[in-house]
Image 1 (cartoon, rainbow, N blue to C red):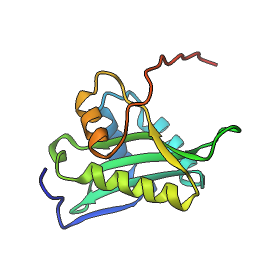
Image 2 (image 1 turned 60 degrees about the vertical axis):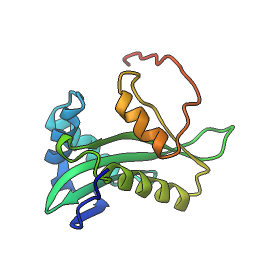
Image 3 (image 1 turned 90 degrees about the horizontal axis):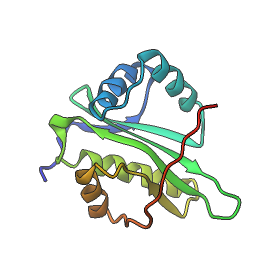
Length: 148
């Protein structure tokens, strides 16, 4: 793995970053309009139980991570990773690692005991990345969805 650029900065998302988040999300196959992404992002910016960090390299946003507090009445607080993306041209340079570490630190500050994430079964490279960060695959499950 190459070292991340010395000009890499991890910071909280700003409203002006919506276009970068959209472009990066499209790289992973997420289908969302700019308007919808901007609307949801603006709600999250004001929510203390959510965080979006961006990785900025030489004034360009090259990655993002969304994490939130996962609350269950029968378990300790946990961080759930809602998504993480690093630009295809910038992968394997430590950027994803830095984003994950920021999310972990945020979770510790919030009093969380663990961090969870879900990953599509087809994302083999992502699974290797997560395992290299110390994550364990603890369960295989189905995801059910119903429109409301």
